[in-house]
Length: 231
Ligand code: SF4
Image 1: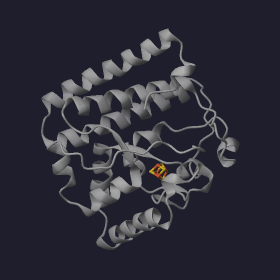
Image 2: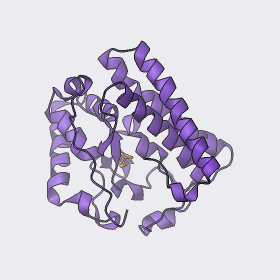
Image 3: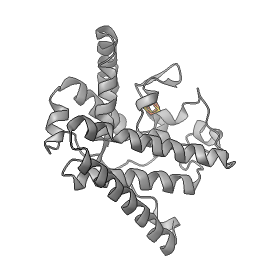
Image 4: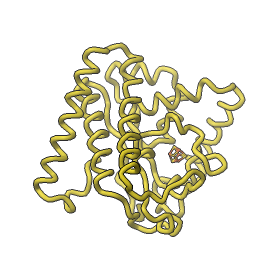
């Protein structure tokens, strides 16, 4: 989850780790004061709001992002999310009609069984099953990974370039927020590690005990496998 250490100077690396620590301590303080299950899960909304602010602030300062609604090249890249993000998404999905929810479950299952998507390079993967008509159907609750994702050249995304040009400052700020929040959940005795989005949301939808078991300190989701070559 931490950025490429090779591109940071020692001072930048120290500053980044301090940012992670600051976020973690603030998050630990909040979680300690709000220990109920619902509060602990929905606290992750503050991570989403903070990452959105990082992106909005960068744009307000004139940073060029080549992303726009309807451009969904990045939505075939693998997405990872931490457990409370997964429960937030599952909680939003179960509010939908029984018919729609059954359709979503079927789509997630088909996505996972069509082929081993996680083993494929980015260019060969199917789009995220939450993508509908080139728009994210879970946009208000999409994970921090999706919120921080951006490109300064949509052409590179369309070509599935091995390296997508991005703004390092924006990535660092978002990664500090994600790393600090994950660390706070871990410090609270909960699984705060990242999990592959589709598999994890499907599990949360099919197992109504998942959230309570996670809140009791169980490892509910599979650990993320190493990222294969090709992004
Ligand atoms: S969750 Fe939404 S934004 Fe993220 S990859 Fe899927 S469709 Fe795209």
